[in-house]
Image 1 (tube, rainbow, N blue to C red):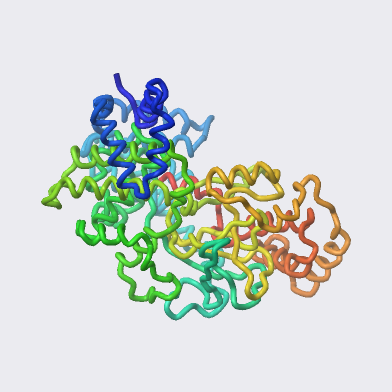
Image 2 (cartoon, one colour; image 1 turned 90 degrees about the vertical axis):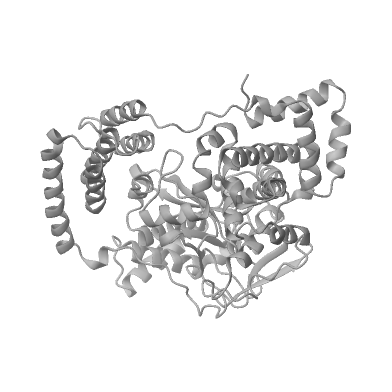
Amino acid sequence: MELNATEISNGMWSCFLVDGELAQVEQKIKSYRSNDEVISFIRGVMDKHKWMKFIKLRGDPKSNARAIDCRKRGNEYFHPRIRQYIKAVELYNESIALAADNSEALAMAYANRSAICFELKEYADCLENIRLARENPYPANLLPKLEQREEACKVLMNKANSEKPKTDQPLEPKLSYKSNPRIPHIAECLELVQDEKFGRYLITNRDLKAGDVVALEKPFSKPCKGCTIAMFCSDECQQKAMEEYHRFECPILQDIHRLVEHVLVPALRLTIKTLTTFNFDLEALRLLMESDGKNTPNALDMDWTSIDPKETYEIVYNLESHRDKRSPDHLGQYAINAIIMSEILLQRTKIRDNCKNSNALRNITELLIMHHAMILPVNSFELSFEDYEDKACKREVLMEGIYTILSMINHSCAPNSQPMNGSDDNLALYVLRPIKTGSPITIKYCVKFAITPLQERREYLSENYYFECQCEACANDYPLLENLKVVLQKDMKHESMRYCKSNKHDPKSPVDMLKMCLHMINKFDQHTPCVELEELETEVAKYFSDVYWNNPRKLKYKSLCNI
């Protein structure tokens, strides 16, 4: 019999129930003050009843036959009568991931993907895929067709470069105010405060207006998500990943994805990166874990111009985990997943070669995985974009990352700020509504008052973030969008006409439309909440995406079509 981590967890708890031990076990886990105690208890149960024997590893074998099948299915979506390029790219990517190195199957998959790039006018990517096809044994009888595409691509790329105005390039978000001299990626107006009610959170020491950009942060940890299991956007990206974590996760990633819940997989990757960041200094990691946040530095007091990766990780490690609010069965599930992932990592990779004491490595690895599994879901930010194709808005998630400063921003169901993707995995924080001096910076944790009813919001936040929301929208029970009042229609129409007349407004320019929407929000914010301001906030998100991404509808392709 073969079981995954969730099935083992359910089976173990069922046995506790049948044996009449459930209440005793839950009380015991609840009494433990450390993850080490929980893991030790769960491992004892797993060893006693031999639960690990149900974990069956298959490895990640390459298969040219499966690669060819994926490519052929991709061809069906690429057909001129179908033209579903995104689906075709997904299948070509899967074909590339499955194909053996230096095989005809790999060459053919790259060549077919170059055809997608050509049709989407991504000429640089097209040429790179053609290069990769040639580096593998591409069939000689098909070379003329590939060469013809290459020549056509070069001609069209040169033509596009000569004709394309420079203003067509997406803008780069920049801080609206002077940067913090010690933390160049945030504005000097942001301060970190702490109290018993809200914990650590950011406030502003000056008035802010809608449209201000107050942070531009890179992630400490993020996956390079291209497609099937692991693909990389460049040779440089692949090399960096190999140094930090991928050389250890590569042999086991297929099994990990099959055996462990998808949301917990990043905990393993962050654990491997932590071990390599500390150069496998287990004693240093042990001291960090035993400090229990007592000596946690104020992130805004540190000098980020010269910060060490270990210091950055110390901030990450001490992000909120809500451990004390988690139920015994949840803690048990985290421990089971940590034990299984740690066991696979130590038994099926060469990571043990970096430490003399394999027992200590196993213990540290289990503790890190369990801790990371708790902090990641409540502190990660999604890098996403809004696809407005066919007059419908669809949110596409590209990846998730840990942003050490932005992770300290509190939630509101009527947020005054919004994270936005920047280039190179930066996350830009822009102000959505005017914010007064001394007020907290807030964002939404997935739920907003205009879309989700009060009770449903509170239940979601309690179950996933372990707090009862008392924001202005919850305290005042703001109505849903369909029940909001229309109060500004005439005033906004008059103001928009005046604004357009005095500012040489171009309604076809996303930049001009963004400026006008922000102007209206700043002018009429005192009327919050109302239909018009909610609709303006949606428009601002769209125009920010257009201005700073330029062509957001191509992002899904760009996220998939990694080299």
